[in-house]
Amino acid sequence: MARPLPRDLTLGELIERFGGELAAGSPSDAVRRLASLSGARPGDLSFFSAARHKAEAAATGASAVIVSPALADALPAATARILVADPYAHFAAVARWFAQLLEAPPPARLVHPSASIDASAELAAGASVGAHAVIEAGAVLGEGCAIGAGSYVGRDARIGAGSRLHPGVTVYHDCVVGARCIVHSGTVIGSDGFGFAREDGRWAKIPQLGAVLIGDDVEIGSNCSIDRGALEDTVIGDGCKLDNLIQIAHNVVIGEHTALAGCVGVAGSARIGRRCMIGGSAGILGHLEICDDVVISAMSLVTRSIRKPGFYTGVFPLMENAGWEKAAATLRQLPVLRDRLRRLERAAAPGQDLSIDPKD
Image (cartoon, rainbow, N blue to C red; front, side, top):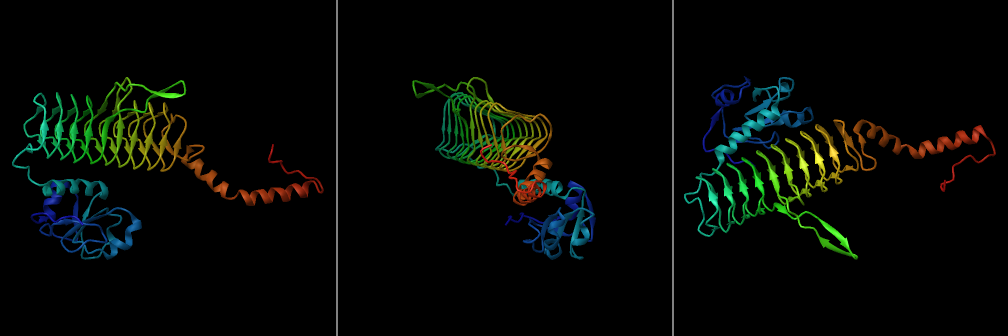
């Protein structure tokens, strides 16, 4: 449950800052906490963006709800409404502001006494380093960035202004994290790519000499692994969002504002375009290319390049989603269709066996 703000905010303040039209309420009405429709109490602000949640909306205890005009009548009559075209996006903006208001004040000491910082590392004014963190030689920390307790920033690595590494993040040597990024605990950036050559029946390691370059405004979830390139760099473009437990192999390039859900695996040298959405546990084979504006369903396996924007689903074969749904519906009917075909064959040629031998 979200924490309450230190002070009440009026609906008038929210309208002035974020826009929207107030209905069934007063600008002086106050809210202090964000909550879901089902968990909201008086004094809470919620949002309602999908008709499938009408039952929760009708019973909500929220004092005010961000909602589209088309769904506003589903709320209790006494509930204040902030009418907007896109309630989910509007709520996201409000939530970011609430998070800023709830953020703890900066520590009095920016560098914890137990942190290990090489004398040649560069820390901009306002950069903070938590307990037992390690900053190696030549590393650069930008203005206002925050390195969490126990995190590691390797030799000549760079962390951009305003970025935050949560506790226990590892950034290997020479890697770059852009400005305003968030990297959650347990993530490793710049570990060796999976590069080995067979020599006389044994595996010989291929040195991984590239780095990882992460753009601005990227968020990476917990326990992700982003491998450094073999010769060139692994690249994560501006604005990308990675969920938890994602594997990005060496030399992968991901275009701007692409989002990957949990447990996605991307094999080496694959190239993913801009504004793509990759569903949870999907797999992308190595050296493939996916163009801009592609959506891939969860659990799908991409075995060939995708050169046309669209919505794709499947394991084998991967195909456009509309075609896959038709094929899946037909697959469920295969036993019935087989029996019908056999009856038609017997009727067309009585006494003759026209069935197909499975060996054929």
